[in-house]
Length: 468
Ligand SMILES: *Cc1c(COP(=O)(O)O)cnc(C)c1O
Image (tube, rainbow, N blue to C red; front, side, top):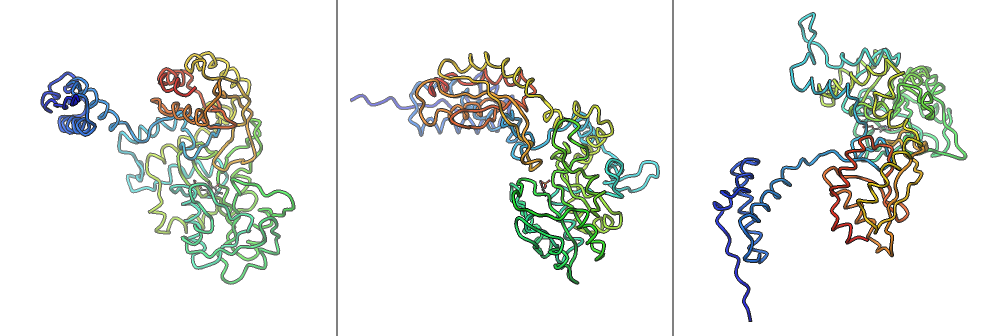
């Protein structure tokens, strides 16, 4: 019997001195390169490597290993899920104006909390407050980390050790464990549920009000709709009731928009201005949902109440940093020119792409995708229904077009999953969704066609052959 030849590894030094070793040192430093070479040699030894593992091969494996380790954990992906504001994919994309403002704020000291003319300490929220009051008609505004923080701050300030009255039809849970009852509890407020899941009347609220009441609250049922035999109390009636009892009325809009979306053919969603005109004392909403800005929570409304929020020590813990304030300021400024908003604000630009444009894009991509996948796959251009996402307009879909890819022959059950995985394994991962036995790419959010085509070249042909 022939005993396999034993793996006799080169010394770490020999690999370090090879061309690959020198490249590894130049790119990653001597300490990291030495460690990685040692590790690769160990792996080869443990795996019973053939004696033929050359210095060059070890050097290449070292470079691979170091390259993978240095790849950023958070990196760009191509969102072809059909959900524009995808929470797991980072929600709104920033406008170029906002990106430039962030970069400028990163590179230099700024007057974040400094009044330049007076030469004295200033207030960070002042950079954005004026824009919010101008655009919404609110008396005042305050900024925090996200809308969950905004709700927490409001409840903790106005309803700590008191009751917050909310309809049972509005006790929402939003993906990522934002549950209204849990936030209430952490804010130190007692949830006073009124009405039933499908019907709540004004008298339900009225009967719940007592000496322990802190506020009345309305919560946008962002990601669901109660339909059928339903009744809810309108904000104007609630505002009136709150006023009679000298209680604040808070309207958590969730997504919150500053403009009438019907202007672009979308369904009209209650705006922040509507909520304030409707009698809300405070309105809370997100920066990175329909608004199209950075992650942020905005509270707009009555000056005396905002002043109380500002005094709460939690505000300090929930405050925005200079980067997001810069991005928010630049984003809000775009709203002064609604005529150009759909070109400048990526979120709105993506919402307003037409089905026929997207179909034309699908047709342009067809030959490229077909060539990349080979004969084992069937390609179909399909109609899609994109979603807004992040709980905004949950029932509203946007007519879109996409690609459906399915195996040509008799498919094994996992062929489509494997294809999806192959598209996720390219340098800029392409994220689609699987529906009815096909990998579906909704093209609404694909603006960089060349980037997508470059990813096709990176699809590993051997992986695809194995699939079909
Ligand atoms: C999304 C949402 C929140 C949470 O907002 P974040 O900005 O994600 O923290 C709170 N309330 C409602 C109604 C929402 O839709």
